[in-house]
Length: 399
Image (tube, one colour):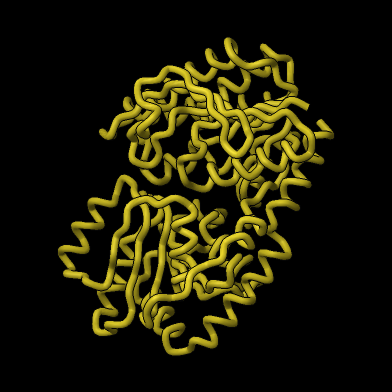
């Protein structure tokens, strides 16, 4: 079967969709499928085209034995709805042109959202190639963008809701990364064929990483990922402020994003010497930091929207036996704290509870170890990427 994965985000960028889709492509190819990627020139998360890709309208390369077709995209470090929409639609147009000119027709298109607007390209290609369309939703749009205040223009929001429904109706299968996403789409489209396609842990990747021996006796807390509006990372800095007197507790924040500069200003204002910011790192380097840390912090802002969210960044720490400090209500808490016993929960945006949880693990290292082992067993049993990909492949065969 010939499968084209259409996504704005793909390695060498790092992030949840990049990791999930590159892993999926590998598994689908291992089943004997002809898999190709249609994506943009890499620019995430700094909104700057990576070196080696600048100035190119089209570029073809091979990543992990998968052919990757790249088309141009407009990027700007400045904000605003006009520039944001220009970013999305520039790739919508360029990807359709590249597909029509350079790719052979597919049997199945798998389209990643967000951005929602890429679904327009996917539907048009479905009609051109007379193939099946799988629309994967890793974040509900425009709901997320509206509730977080990223998009405030009512006309754009209303049109986006109508567009989402149109794309869902034209898809042969809609998959979602959380049960909350799947339930929300089912409420809008009761007749739609749906599939829960969670993020997970790649045991092969983890088992092939030797890890590193911890280099000091500090109690190390880690966050690695996008530094954006949704994460509410201010809670980490305020917790660090409460723990200034514990000189052997140190925080590391790895990543880049739109609110990093404001966090650096907050660090300066609070005079925090117990936090180190590190620029975005390749996944191999992040794994080294994971092995060094004592616990991993997973925060989100306190919004009802996120009660159906499962941050993908929690899987790898749990996969190597690290306890998590989870500041996410709803589905994530139910699965990974209540059921898996993989860490401690703190109320989102509550720095007092976060600092208390840190002290609890700091004072009871056996508890930290036990929570890590429990979480590791849970994700290895229920969130293995090879098993998830196998179930997804069965859904594709049934289309």
